[in-house]
Image 1 (cartoon, rainbow, N blue to C red):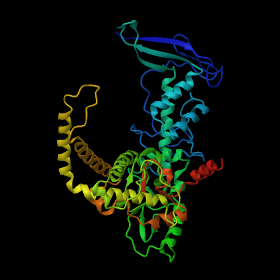
Image 2: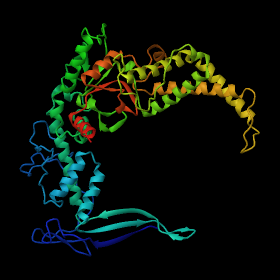
Image 3: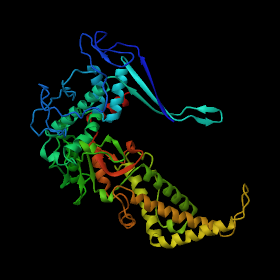
Image 4: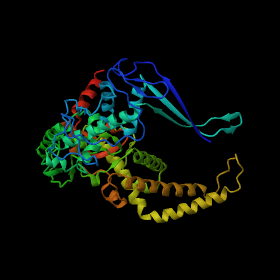
Length: 499
């Protein structure tokens, strides 16, 4: 039978956040004793009231009358924010948390901390100088081989002013909501509409902008040109001026009479500004969310995440071994490499002016095309042969003694080859299906996995853009992607290079 064991004790430190002349607490009952700055108040109990959103923090007398805690309409008076993005905390009651403590909690909220984590830290901050209860809940005594054991089920920190702390933290979260709404209304209409869910979508992403170094995201987002084009193709979502400048330089090279001239017109689909996190790391801001990245002809130049890259490496390693072995269906192809998907490609430029990374990716694409072209039409037959081979292997090893290596039986090598061939074909088809966007085998046979001409990569590199085949993308391959580094990342990269 479980029981609660309260333990009251005083921790070192000042009695209250304003010094010994502030509020004191009774050792036994947790009752607040009046000091020069306060009046006697019984220890708080029960659930904290739902805080209403203050509409006028300057006077701090008025609150929204409705009980739903809704947000003010656009244009309604609300709090301002200073250059650091810090909302002025409402002064609806005497603060239990000090200004320093509120600043610590506010930074956590700006970084996207969950409410329960912020509340826990707030109580730890106050517990460092006040009297509090530590409630431990134990389970039944359970017999063990070495004797009876106490099983700890729960532990909670309880402060006499818990309700007031909860209320202050909730008000900080309300401040954050109002700050996000205020910033959202500063965005141009053509930028606003690209946030899924409106201001709620902006609210969900704001902490990523903050962690990326943007204390006031509208300043940067309102620079985006939603009418920008590249090679005569409109860029969906638009681009930031930093990238637009680079694209103009690259476009001049591709349209000009020089060695990079395409001498052809393309009808590319190009995607630019999209407010989101990185596709395979949602906790970091994508450069697309700043308008500083574009994806060109994504349907035929898919992105492979780390997991798919590792699978493709296994398939390519097996294919290389089979070519060395001399299998007939690979001998007719002039293939080099292959090169790793899950590691960095070569950063150097080649004598013909193309990037080594592009040529390596191009060879990987040819390996994949060759395998699919020869074996995909026989997929179902290969599966049947592999199933029969597994049954054969099981039958010949049925009576093997444990720990002994059985001699190879006639037909066993062919059975292994049949299983490997079918398994690697299925691995490849699965990796292509999980790419972004998904690639069908028929599509890969026709176009491979990279279709952009090498001149595009060369012109972009010379203009100052970074490709998704850059060594920095060592864990994945993204041949559709081109970007410019945000200024803050450029400074960080330059600083690291100078060390």
